[in-house]
Length: 180
Image (cartoon, rainbow, N blue to C red; front, top):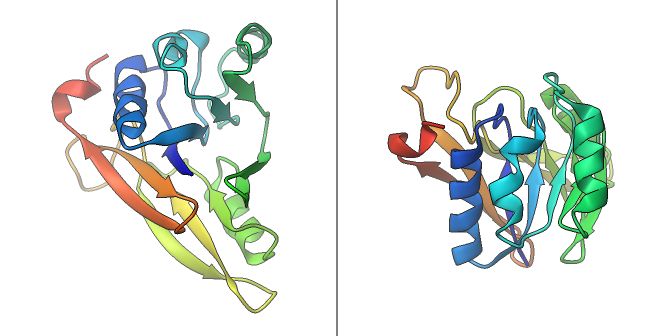
């Protein structure tokens, strides 16, 4: 199973929709949004793509009540998990949160195959050693809106993950897609 991992869209719908559209072309069957989604309008066009979206809070929470109402009305296309999400997709145990230190801590437990987080706006993929003697994939998709990318001029990033192979690829988008 392939998945699209995004974060930090900060109320910008066009780049979020563009990332999910591209991921769908590559066979993605689910989206994990690692926080700072902000509002329901950010999701409207993406939900029309027909791929279930799982989202968690960020530190810029936005209108939580409206997000929960959208979830109820989404017919299973949008799941708003609150602070963190524990998911099973493609036979893999996945933990999603917004804050990097929470992500690293949960990766260290060895209870998950994949831990996703956001917040820093810097994409990275790493193998984190865990207390069970193995490792857990720890990924941050960066900012799908290309906001505040340290040392870079507005690069929007997201991750295409393959849960069968446990491979992850940082994808970038053109600057024209960032204008929303």
